Image (cartoon, rainbow, N blue to C red; front, side, top):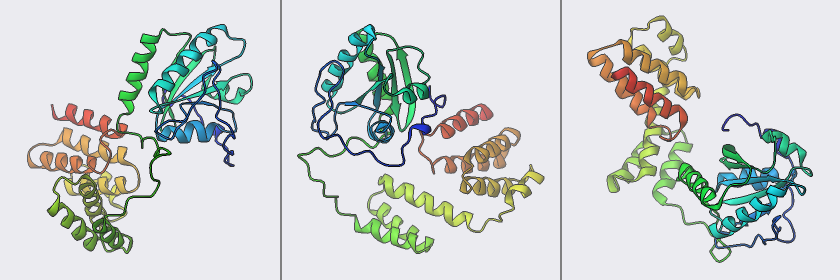
Length: 304
């Protein structure tokens, strides 16, 4: 369903106040708090949809159960989902929506029949099904959702028994970020390099220094580099500069396509340099980004 459902219309400008008592699911199971600080089961309305589904799904998957009081299959499925949500202990949240009371939500999901169940992650629909499913199949479906989002969400907040005090900032990163905020890219790179000299595997510093080096490089590129490269498709240097400008302009798909096309039609050192530059641009992004994954497949096809 990803990309096929527009949930933006359900965002409310004013945040709804939290309920005064823990909500109770349709099957009667209390949505008790747990060690994650999340309610495993919540009743959702149009007013609370943004906070309880869209925002919450940045932390953990939200499984939206679209049901109705007159629906007999819902009376079988909802209690089973509640049981699994309570068992999961807040690693995912069950959001229950009465479609009759909240028609805009049902309309946004394009609900044709109930029960309909939709998994939301990072504010986007990930997977869905309709009708009653047996428990083993439900567990398998939920496990697939967990695997698909592993490492991509921020995770549940600290539980009530844990401290809410933030961890002290690493002074090494404070110095580097201060230089970056001041526009001194050379100093920022030097500070991040100090961290890498001490900890070569520090992923945060490695990612930061790549970003800083890219920013330093793109500062000297002519803003007209894209049109210049389009006029000289066989000029490698022009293509590299244009790709940098396109990434900086938030058009990575165009940058990747440009260099993949050059790789496909070139040979020797030019082919190697274009490929190396493209791989460096990939490293500026999360490797799980769809635009990167697609470009990697196209690059493989261009090479082989």
